Image (tube, one colour):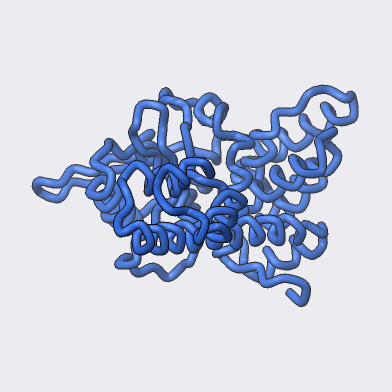
Amino acid sequence: MSEFDIDYQNYDKVFKSSFSIFKNEIMDFLGVDLPEIDSFLETEFSEIETSEERLDLNFRLKDGSILHLEEEADISTKDLIRFASYDLRLYNRYLNKVRTIILCVNGFEESQASFEAGSINYNSLVIDMSKRDGDAKLEEIKNKIDKNEEVNVLELIFLPLMSSKKEMVERVKNTIDLEQQLNLSESKSSKVVAMTLVMSDKFLTEKEISQIWEEYKMVKIFKYAEEKGREKGEKERLKKTAIKLLTKKLQGLSKESKKKIKEQDLEELELIVDNIFEIENEEDLNKYF
């Protein structure tokens, strides 16, 4: 990892910049009757201890409910208790229905995984990925590419999670090979590969992930994501600075003005801060919105 530090914070940024690739079609692909995804839900719980610093896949659905997506090789009661604890925190924060879907790689006989603990009754929906023949799907997609036929990129993104006789790292590499043959823009191609790795990362070692990124020269998407992350951090800093300085200078700042400042892009925020001495009242401030 000489060129770039591939850590899970960067993974988080990659996912946030790439998940739109599948958000409108994922429900149909998984075969579940749920509303469409509206947005990626950024959720961190500092009080939750975890042995794996991996990305939490949470989404706001069109009806306001929350989709919590997990990938597991096998499902144990211990896993379900962990998911339930996390879901309770989600519910406590947002007070909206939480729907948990588990993509199970090694197979699960029931369509739901659940446990009962007195007054607590926890249920999750299971998608048995082992019932989808990954090797056959790989050949099918190869043939479509050879014939210049349209390929469903979702099938590629989830291909490594389907059943296969190959090891996970080989599945991922085979999938990326196919993705790079698609007639996609460079940006979209990078995002499809990024999504494939994000969905498979739990089943790969950190060394394998790093090797894949270096081998396929995909480090640039991490750099792009890191740049976006820095931009977001700078925006938050400027929002706080603008509000603090204007509140002090104008001896108060209305809720409406504070709201408008928080809605501004980086360039507008820089302009407000640069011209802070020219702003004598909120009417002057409105010229920058």
